[in-house]
Amino acid sequence: MNRLRHIKFFDTLSKKMVAGFLALITVGSLLLSLPWATASGHATSLINVLFTATSATCITGLTVVNTAAHWTPFGQLVILGLSEIGALGYMTFAVLLFNIMRRQIGLSTQLMVKASLNLENLSDTKSVMKYVIGLSLLFQVGGMGLLALDFIPRYGWIRGLYTAMYHAVMSFCNAGFDVFGDSLLGFRNDSYVLIVTMILIVAGGLGFLVWRDLLLYHERKRLTLNSKLTLLTTLSLFVIGFFLLLVTERDLKLLPTNTSWFTRTINTLFLSVTPRTAGLITMPTGELQAGSLFVIMILMFVGGTPGSTAGGIKTTTFGILMFQSIAQLRGRQDVEFSHRRFSQENISRALLLIFLASIVITIATLILTQTEKIPHGFGLEYVLFEVLSAFGTVGLSLGLTPHLTVIGKLVIMLLMFIGRVGIFTSLYALTKRQAKVNQIRYPVENILIG
Image (cartoon, rainbow, N blue to C red; front, side, top):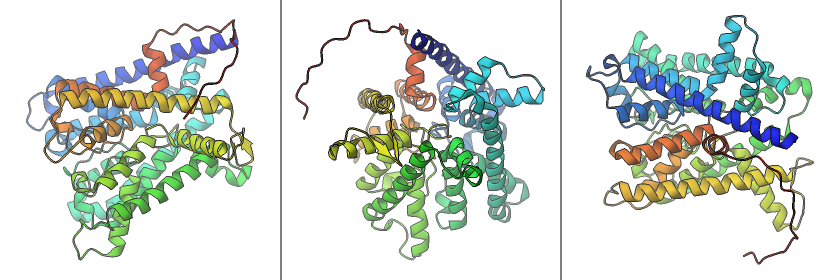
């Protein structure tokens, strides 16, 4: 009975979370459809408004129009607001509003916060909320200050502060929108801006629970298993991605020959960091080598950490499956890490997530190959790259997004939504599951595998 009640509760909770994100997208679409949201003064088409609002709410960064040229500061600030709320979770802002109004937080609200931030215990809700809001302000305001040191001399006080604020928020939220018009292509030689941006991207993608563990380490003298696995997987992906991209790009030969080794290294490191759902880029993706695109697609598929501003299947899922594979190859029954054993439920859930993600990506890719035109010189990677970017809420593109058909836009919008809300939450909300427990268990029999 407890399991039945748990499933029914998760069904209800999932529907509320999905409804909340849809409501946020609707409000954002209405604001972006206003004539004064566009530089031309004319209302943007409904499908483009919906696409932009979905991309911002799902902190993706894929755009069908140029953010810097198409939208006025009002429209850009609407996109920024949607990205901020989408990144931290609309429930975070609901709790913040309750605190400002000095009202008690109800049990249902606390349960939704617990689910949205992937908390294990309900008692953690209030303490984690303080870390979420505090760390977000710390990194975004701090990042704005550091970027302002570069942008104010470059653009002047007003535009310098505005671009510093916008870029700091979008980097920390891993959103990928920019007000420069060409992402960070104009900053490939500005290592200072790239380093600050990478710090913000990693800070946002690491997860608030991990940051809380790190900040409280001096008191507890230990890290949770989740934080250990997250840090190990994240560091491994950064290092492996960095060295693979060094090899595939031949130390970024596409940069001018007089580019220093330090600048090349920073740009390569940035290229390894940004596919972790950030979406900012310092060089045209269409000029990258095929091997580099393949590495980036893998990084986009994995994404960031549960409870962070990132998307993808998440580092913990990838880490569990890696240790599961190692245990199987070594002939061990238990999957162990850091003197702990992963539960079978964790392993089964990770395998199911990978399977469902593969199905979603396969279907979306198949549909887009039929509805979209692939330019000469490109192949399947032109579509698959876009699909993985949307599912991982990354925002990188080989150029397909501005030329998407209406069906293509709907498919990408659905992928961005699933990538942000989560496959399990989406399925619970969109399907009518009947909670039941099997009364009969059949005999076990093995089949041939491999």
